[in-house]
Image (tube, rainbow, N blue to C red; front, top):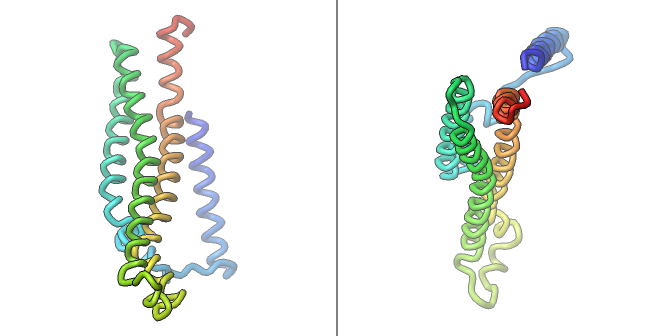
Length: 184
């Protein structure tokens, strides 16, 4: 575990040094013109809207469960059943990240389609006036961006949290299981 942290830390230090060298040598130019750099909260709200609440609650629950398991793994009188229960809760929390992404994808798609079709008559009369660009604009502003963003965010967080669980709990959890089975 310590060697992994050393490798990551050294990698970050080398990256920072090479980035500074590149900037001072003129090879790399850094500008803060991207909107998400200037106002990350507005950027996240624009893309994720109210799914931020669900994702936020899941992040808090994930952090608490991770902390709880790490604490219990350090206690000598911890029972396997208790840790197994928290492990299942942690796995369910991680899986729920994927679920929230999928649910908000459906919500975003439905909202986008309803917005795009709003005001259309059965003959498509309003469709001709709106045009393809107008229809696309209605879809994107109506929820298509939300649908795509929550899918990507939910999937990314789900996989990232699985990886963090392995890195932060893996060795201790494995030692505990081996000790309980009598092989450690």
